[in-house]
Image 1: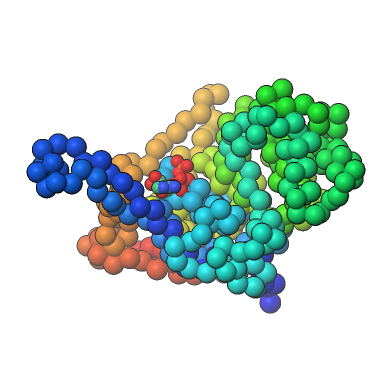
Image 2: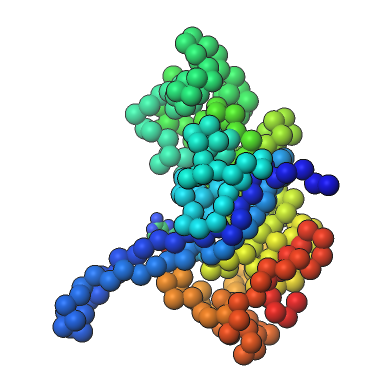
Length: 327
Ligand SMILES: Nc1ncnc2c1ncn2[C@@H]1O[C@H](COP(=O)(O)OP(=O)(O)OP(=O)(O)O)[C@@H](O)[C@H]1O
């Protein structure tokens, strides 16, 4: 029997209210300039992440990846659904101690690191605040973390702007590690870096996984990176999971028509150029998603049933689930 997952998200949804400024005569005549609409950023998603596992999360821009990552990290409370940590239900997003077990590393370290704080404060503040390390021991703790992420411990008196993009991302990783997490949510954590620096930071993530047994929820639009790093990949479309599968099986034979179309976008190196074949058709608005299967207007095999009925995510093989009426 498989062990209890580290993090279990069950039927999680997250909605946001969006204020729309209605311009024009009709809106004025109706006496309303502002209207509220609901964005279903995450719609009934269930995901398990096991100890030491790397789960890739992919999908086109706006499909809800970041929102799901923030729910997983306790930054957003879900509008619906439950979250369990090692089998224990987290109420109201979880206690501070529970939340420390999941840390997030963002795309742009410069905006997530306080520019006025020296690195020793950036990294040492949270563990000191939570009593993980006290007094003079903080300096040695920060130095050890800097070494762990491949930076010179003497850098701890510098400020974030004195580092390169790759070094800043290492600092953001050291800050995440400082509270001894078991799961790190990486939200496009290498996307802003040069390709050679990307590879170094990805190697660091994998070294830390081996050394500390860390699990990752790895959000990326780069399907090549996700293939390289993930044990399992979850594909989202307009707030819903459409396919979840072990990485080699998914890349060898995607089953959902969207997964199929998306994987055609994996850059292929042809005569030194990166070639993309974008998924055909517009991404519909999450303010007004299509009925039935959200993908049906762009799907080459959809029929009238797909336009009416939402397909459930069904297990089609061990560890592999697909939400499609035709699979
Ligand atoms: N705080 C918020 N308030 C209102 N709407 C939001 C908020 N955060 C996200 N959204 C909306 O929720 C939807 C999903 O956004 P999200 O950022 O999670 O998608 P994403 O897949 O991570 O996209 P990207 O790759 O572009 O970051 C989008 O329509 C977005 O506009």
